[in-house]
Image 1 (cartoon, rainbow, N blue to C red):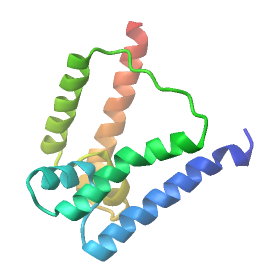
Image 2 (image 1 turned 180 degrees about the vertical axis):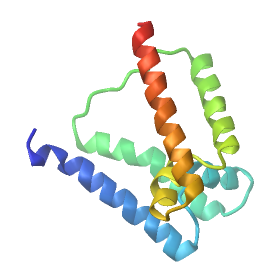
Image 3 (image 1 turned 45 degrees about the horizontal axis):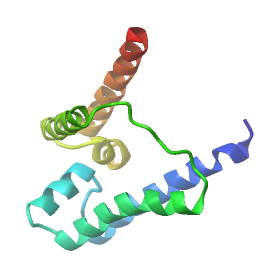
Image 4 (image 1 turned 60 degrees about the vertical axis):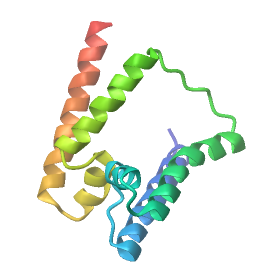
Length: 136
């Protein structure tokens, strides 16, 4: 692959880094999706939380409208998707944050807890993908 093939990922990573850095510098908040969404549901920081969550939902729709991208498919039933979502929510509470808060900003800040959590996320993701591939 040429370097140009990696430019969209690089640009996305840079934009994400700038966004989480600005949220920390301007509002003093960590851009962890689970925390932002939890505070939004609890009626705290509604303005910031609503803009952030709307951006997560509308951003991909905007990009898809501007580019001809393939339609993703999910080969799971709605009960399975809902159970998976609940398990992810439980895991973020258990781990005191999600992959975005720990993996993006926590690691950049040198947080030992975030480094450990990110290592666990990556190792379990690798194990799950490997096991899933073996079971097919």
